[in-house]
Length: 413
Ligand code: SF4
Ligand code: SF4
Image 1 (cartoon, rainbow, N blue to C red):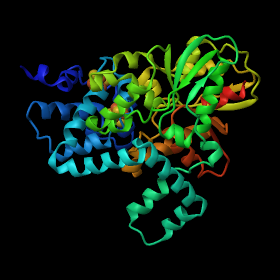
Image 2: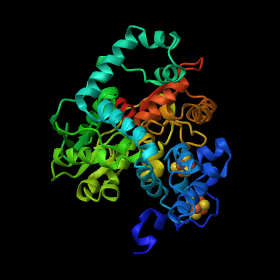
Image 3: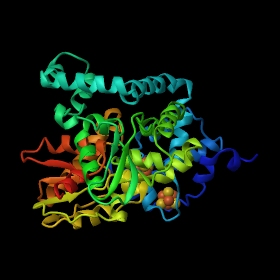
Image 4: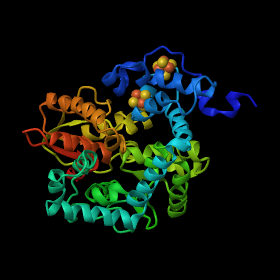
């Protein structure tokens, strides 16, 4: 068996013709201006490893891949169709198995398993964090003599909303408010369920108004996207299997309100070699609604706002027109275009916790672009970007509001 047959990531890397057209789109190249922190440089390093020119344990390879946000802006920019995400994630899986990195991978895996993937522990940790924030303990911890990394980590934890905002949707079947047009399920996720219950509830109301009978299956859970992006495929497998068992088979679509989760769920077959029937049903909330049509006459929502494309919506799923088409149907909603709307905000799953300095400088550029629009409302569709941009905007003197597109559509009901 030759190298191309035995190593699919290497085969994908051969599609790169080194033209460099992806470099200006890459946030780490924009920030660090080094070839090794560009998509082309990373591909060359991974190819060099496959061809035996450098060892997998070579620090420059690990550093270059750790710095990558997996935002996939390079895929959108590449005229040769290089599937960079597939190459990167295959290499991250290889790196996670290196003895020198195995401890770190195991630590990250158990953190994700316990704090995100386990429903009960995830809910408990979010409630504890909410209580600590309400009592001012999070702020207090940042002035106590803890190590710097711990203080920085504590400062980065998201603000947990009040119980009424978090309150998740009860599992069940929700009937449409008018004639039935589709039979669907709503994926409620992990962070979306505990931090953004209000968004999922808004999405449910809009879907019911659009004529959907909506299943909210009780045993669904975390999609495994964060595990997959970190190269922890083995830990993601049980999460994928749990969702495959949880959703009914005879549905028109499975609707996802988080761009990162939707992108991962559409790609289950290429990562896990399973779930192809399930994945073909997965649709982003905006993609589904724009294609189905609203099915109701939207009321006026007098507001000026701007829209930011989450990376895993535009680059990961190729969805760009759909959210704009939906927002354009709302009377009196004026959408002011954002400069560089497809540039990453620096959140990238847990990248902002792992690489805070780099993530902050990428966020600063996004915040400046938002300020330039002159509006105070930002609309987006991914929980990580939502929290991260909200934290950047909270440091400004003016009051900004960040909304999920489902919340804006719910205002038009
Ligand atoms: S995924 Fe994003 S950060 Fe990584 S190489 Fe591509 S453009 Fe750069
Ligand atoms: S990834 Fe694509 S755009 Fe970037 S250097 Fe290779 S061929 Fe050119």
